[in-house]
Length: 362
Length: 111
Image (cartoon, rainbow over all chains, first blue to last red; front, side, top):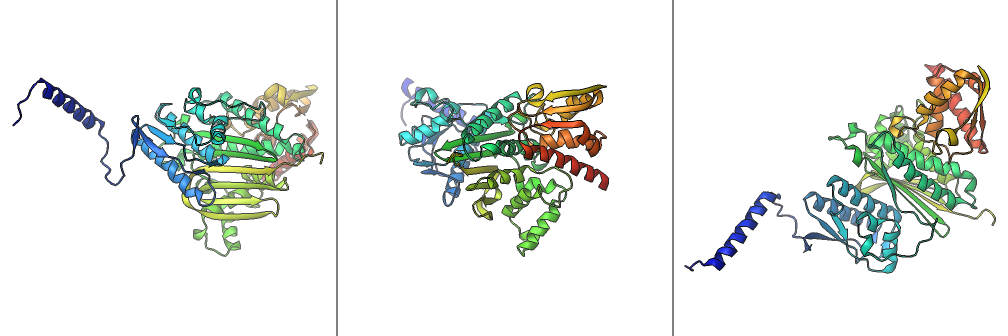
């Protein structure tokens, strides 16, 4: 037996203190989860090479988002390793931004998620341009790139549940509308500015009216977490607009609309399927058609049909909606609609408009 | 009762008229109808709605504000067509307002 001295007693005391701290932390024992690498006390999560919700990238990206959320929920601070990111699509960036912000609000900490530097200057510029570094409070330590005034807009966000004044929401929407109007100036869509206004504001209104309705949640959604996020990006002759919320999702919220069951029945009949087999994609289609259908009882529910109309007015436009286990796509070039099942549940709703802008003086 | 009054939505109410009711914030179609339109119709024979100074119009706002006069305000479509005048360069938006009022009248008759 080794004789104890002052030196070993000191080590013993430190070890006892560490054991006491760990005991108080009461982290659940989860043997099935591999040990994640920690850097400066943060769990490192490697971001996928491509930030995209399309094709094969969909599942990889959502797995990554889920990984971040799970680790934050386990009381871990997270470091997102962006060094492998080579390509970023606006809708995926919007979802990424929204999940970081929601985590910050839920755990009341701007420091809960941090990021590493990016692989390339181009990718770093994208993250800076849309406000990611500002969100994570890393803007002071990241390179700043020349801005093009009026041509860039950070991701806009507001809460629908905060207060009745709603001035912040209006301020954010005003930025989006002004940017969109400016992008549409001198294009063939210029005369249709009201359809852009209607499409965007009706989508935001749907968030306030339906998405965070407490009847769809087992626990009440706190007001400050009832958010919407919008990204608008004009690049060359393409305009991308995406609206995202983390609410109940269209397949659930449409169940409340009077007359919707009759519409869903007619869609099921048209595709020769029993109603029970209709996927979430078809339910999204029903929600889009509801506003102009003969089944609606009152004049409500036009929001998604206006979202489609905005694209229909553009010769090469596309509308994409992701919600629940379904997606809906409408292409104006051939007026074709497509519904698909998603391999993983998409929490909330994402509406994206892709528009080709043609100069009106061509 | 005065002859007419002009209401400039963009300057007198909000430059961002969207949303149906209080779930959309404090400035919405229902609030506009109750606090601006109804008093104006009560005190004036004709109400001229100047729409050019707003950034655009959401259908929920227009439906709740104007068709709501029929659904909740006790007006008829014919009376409103006579007493309301809309000044806006987007004919499609004006047509939609008349369509919403028409549909509200038909909906009311069905009940």
